Amino acid sequence: MRQSSVDLKSSGRSIGFVPTMGALHGGHVSLINEAKKCNDAAVLSIFVNPTQFAPGEDYNSYPRDIERDKITASDTGVDILFLPSADEMYPEGFKTFVNVEGITESLCGRFRPRHFKGVATVVLKLFNIVMPDRAYFGEKDYQQLLVVKKMVKDLNLDIEIKGMPTIREWDGLAMSSRNGYLNRKERISAVSLSTALKTSQEMVKNDERRAEKIIGEMEKVINNEDAAKIDYISICDPDTLKDIEIIDNRALAALAVRIGKTRLIDNCILEVK
Image 1 (cartoon, helix red, strand yellow):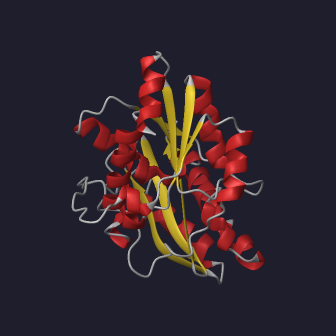
Image 2 (tube, one colour; image 1 turned 180 degrees about the horizontal axis):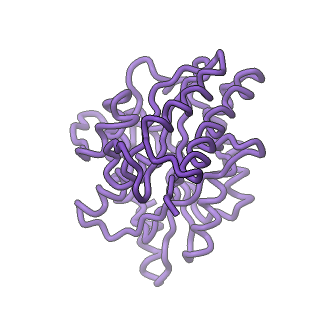
Image 3 (spheres, rainbow, N blue to C red; image 1 turned 60 degrees about the vertical axis):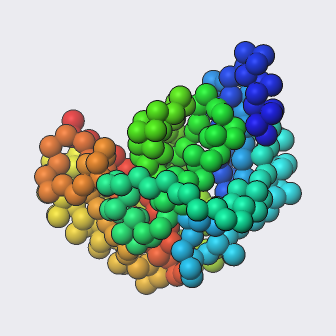
C-alpha cells in the first residue's frame, strides 16, 4: 500500500482516502464519490479495528461481508482497496497508542472510555501507510470527526480532513453498518432517534433556547419506544462538546440510544437564525 502511494505521489497525483470498517452502505459511497471527485486517486480501506472495542462489545459479531464490499468498491470506482489484517496493523509487542484528551471524555467517551484511543491510533497508522492528501469522514460520527481533526492539527499532519453530511434512509434513520442488527420491530423503533433530533430543531426554530427543556422533549420521543434505552442525550458546543444550558448561536444535539441490543448514534446542528 505504501509503495502504491509513493508511486502515485511521485507522478504528481493526489490521494483521497476513505477509512472504513466495511459493511459498506450509502454513507460510505458518498465519501468515496467525494474522494474521487476531488482527487486523482481514491483509496478505500476496510479494517475492523480491535483496539476501539472494549471487552463485551461487538467486535467478533461486527458485520463483515468482504465480497459484497469488494463489489461496492469496484462499482464506485475505487482505485485501491486496502485490506490489512489485525496482525499486520498490530504485530506482536505493539505498545504505542494515541490519546486525544478533552473532547474524548464526553458523549460516547463516557460510555466507551477506550474507544477513541483505538480510533486515533488506527487512523494515524492508516494515514502513515496511505499518505493521503485528503481523508473523508461522515458527520454521523461527529465526535470521531472532531477527534481526528484535533489529532491531525496537534501532530502537524499534512492532511486535509473533510467532514461529509450524514446520509439517511428514506424514513430518516441515519445509515449505519449496525442497522443490520435490527429486526423489523426494532428498525421501526430506531426512527425515534431522527424524530427526536427533528423535535429539537423545531423547538429551536420556535424560539426555545433552554437545553434542559429541549432534552426533556427529546427524551419523551425516545422513551415512547419500548425497545429504546437512552445512553445519553446532549446539547453541547459543536467545537468543544461541552454541555451548554442556553443556545445563543449554534449547538450540537447528539444522542446514543440502545434499540434492543444495538447501540445507535445520531446528531444534528441546532442553529439560531
